[in-house]
Length: 128
Length: 128
DNA sequence: TTAAGTGTACCATGCGACATAGTACGCTGT
DNA sequence: ACAGCGTACTATGTCGCATGGTACACTTAA
Image 1: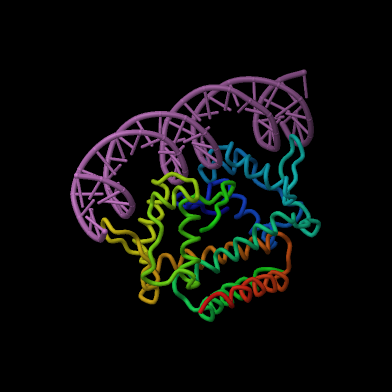
Image 2 (image 1 turned 45 degrees about the horizontal axis):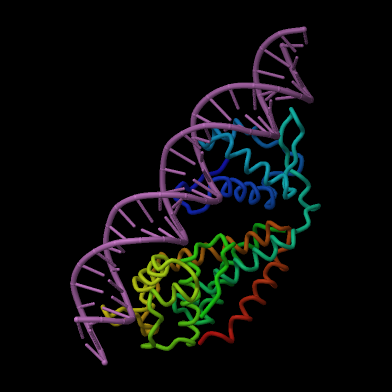
């Protein structure tokens, strides 16, 4: 389904969340589609079931998926998702932070902006 | 000199590094200027000297500051800094990551781009 | 009804990064 | 000589993360 980077600073359950968000928001996984069970996915990506469950629990809290007890976990209707203001603020700050890191490396504002624009445009095709 | 956010996920020594990088790259601290001693700064911001030293050590490794044994720590000539390709790669990935987080929140590509542009332009005044 | 599969809830353990506390040494400038 | 500086080292505690294991309630299909 996807690959993990065990060397990453990002925790495993966060990587699972991001990978699933990517698949959901790009439409690779459609609304109503069944996700692998906690146990199955944990075997697929070779991590502990508790770790997968933590990712699922958080994804459900954020509205990306929903669960029916005893049945399984499914992709939610993402058009219904409305951004949590705190998450939005966090994402803006992360963006600002990353941009500043480019400037810290000695790049001019123009160079950093050019890099940012390139990255942004590369994402255009996958969304909407 | 600056404030820390103890609630942040970012570690203290990283916050110290980023704060100093900001002051250095914006020219608030000039090349050759003396920085507070490890002990002084640790008292100012109320953290352990070891934590400040860790930040200084890493800043020196990256070329932002230099130390003269028994004398003190000083701001380096930032024009000499050449970006470590790995740091550049990391910053690019962080930028991409943050931008994707905006898209995950349900924003259209156009909306996310607009937010990114605003953030970028707000930084223009402080650099170069 | 039974069995398998599902989500879910615990608890205990180990690990690594981080921050702290304390001590100590060598260097430099006055 | 002394004060201030960077530096090194050990030890301790905390926290988040990941793992291993057990258990329970639910649903679906045989």
